Structure formats: C-alpha cells, structure tokens
Length: 359
Image 1: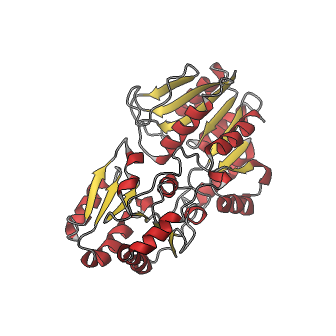
Image 2: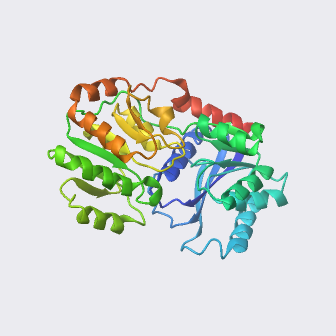
Image 3: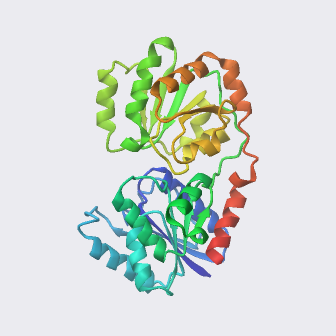
C-alpha cells in the first residue's frame, strides 16, 4: 500500500479547505492501494466537523491539542512535522497549509517523499512581496502544485514559470445534479467563514440598498469566524436585523441549499469556492463578484447567474434586485445550472488525483 499523508492546519474547523480534504481522503480510501493519514497540526480527536470514513486504511492524528504561535515556534513545528513524515515513511505528502514549512522539509529530504502542495486560494492572494517570495521558494522544491482553476494556473505560470509543476484540478463535489432549489422561496443564501476575505462589509452595503425594496425577503448567512461580533454590530447599526439573519455553522449544510432561491457570494478573492459548486449542483441561481479565482468558471454571466465587476456594490445591488423581482429569470438560471461537464465529475477528479499521486 502507498502511504499518503494529508496535512491540515486544524481539522476541527468547518471551512471549505477542511471539507474538500475530507471528501478527497474518504474517496481515496475506497481504493485499498492507499494507507492514508490525515495529520492535523492543531485540534482534538473527536471534535472533527467533517466526518471521515471508518475504513481501516484511514488514520487521523493531531500534533498539538492547543494552538501555539506558528511563526514564533516555526523551527519546533517544522522539526515535529519532519519527524512525523520520516518516522512513518510517508511516500506522498499533500497539503494546502504550511507550504513554506513543508518545502523546507522537502529541501532537506529530497528523495524521501513526494510533496504535493495544494493552492486553496490563488496566486494573487494574499498580495504581498513576502507571499510572492514564499511561493517562489516552495515552487523550487515541490514536486507538484495543484491549483483549483484554469485562470489561476495561467496566472501562476505567467508569474512564476514552473509550467510542468502547476497542475489544475477542480475541487471534488459529492452532490449530484438532480436536486432543484425552490426558487419561489423569498430567501437569499450566503455561506462562508466570517472574515475579511469573504467581503461581508460589502454584503452589508449591498443589503442596505435592496432591503427597502424587498421587505418580504430575508438574507441568511451560514458560517462562523473571527469577525462574527463585528458583523453582528454592523447589522444592528444599519437596522438590518429583520433582513439579515446569522445562522451559525451547520453540519447539514448540503441540505440547506434547496430551501433558497438565490445564492450570493461577496468575496474579495477565492480559490475555487466549493459553496458555488454546491449551489450550482442544487440549480440555485447565483450572483458573485468576478474575483480571482473561481466564480467565472462556475457562473456563466446572464445564463445561470450574474458576474459583477469587482467590486461594484451598486451594480451588484441592481442585479440582485433584478433576480429578486423576476421569478422567471430565477427559473431560467436554475434550469441552466448543468453539472454534466466532465471536469466537475467526482470520478474524473479522483482519477486526476490518483494519477498525480501514483506518478
């Protein structure tokens, strides 16, 4: 059996990165040729938000049961991960976290294991000289870097070269495309961690514009995060408590989409937003800023949703109101959400990963 190690920051978290890791690990485990360990830097056993299969070829480990400052303790963390990788003789290490740290380990142990890094955002974010230096560094030592969109693949190659190392694979999706949302529901849905990247400040600005014209509608937000209290205060300050509802995080999130008639994303940047794919799978009309990267590869503007130039809040509000007021338009957009495209097929994506792992 080939020994694989997936490394995540904290598998107790409820974000898209943790979800897609759980999907890929569970699907790979159906192939008995792999012995898989999911290694979480932080967290506690039993507090996993996303369930892993109980198959005997999956193991989960936590290195630290309480958070420590990663930068202040960088050497200790690198040494601990290196010891874990080498002592367990993992043949392939896959991670979207701690990429520079893992590149340092790979540099010291060139032929001991294959390193596949996984870009869950995109090569322009976070935008800083330090981030670019980090990417240039780990691209020197990584065997492959998986990116989530064709746009990001082109951006990486143009900016950093290393064409043979940059592999594009979409996020896997478990939902079949035969569930239709109820587009007669007067409810807007947003899902995502409550943090700066997701653009909730922009969501509030947009909600202020439209709330008075759709008083029988509501806008529900699922998610949790560091800025939750700040968001609550802003909603109250703008008098939007009767329009915007914070629903917290839910383990049954896949069952929620069909109860809404519009999915709204206000992110400043993305990698490949899994929530958009899930909305797409539920035939849910979508609206998003045309940010890097991902929305433009799921939303076909004016066909199954609206792509709004970044970051035109007024334009977003106008198009969202158009969707709210036009049920036929919502129906047309819903009918045009078709996931028959091979690139989004779970089996096809799994084959791509297996080919990369086995190469």
